[in-house]
Length: 260
Image: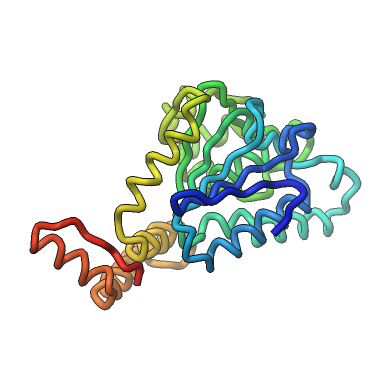
């Protein structure tokens, strides 16, 4: 499929989705959100794709925020719909994606950009990366899950400070806060992400999908994560991957998971 604001590349079962609006520092607009949704929806049903890496074009920005020019004159009703549609189409869609999603943060990740990175299953940052949620400096709050996911990752106090101050933190501080998993040189960012992806993909992707559902359940209101874990654990016993994994272990050989 041809896109105007993103590019995609599949290699070794890894889909790299790159937000490609360099003149806007890869800011998210409605069209970009829709294109990312369409690309992810296609990848969800593509057996060739086992893992997704999200990154930005160039060396300055992952995503420098939302495209403010699109919603500067919105009414309260329109603003509410903007947040709800964006969360459904992209941010929650990424968070609950059945295949691993890694955010490779190659520069500024601000506002909606940091919210997109936080929706991914984990994050790797280049040393020049800077992150923050500056929305209150515009008279609004984060609307794509930022007030929910940031406290889950860094704790309530740090999230309150970051959001209230509208300030940025650098990659090393993000690592200290547990906002990112790794920090690497910018020129090594994608190679590191792909190397880590390779380690993940050696395992049962069926089991990994189940683990994503179980982990996410812990953060869903009214859902007992332990019960979801028990359910997913039990379901695993009926999969071909479980049969292959246990057989390989007992016979002291490398598992060749069928993905079923």
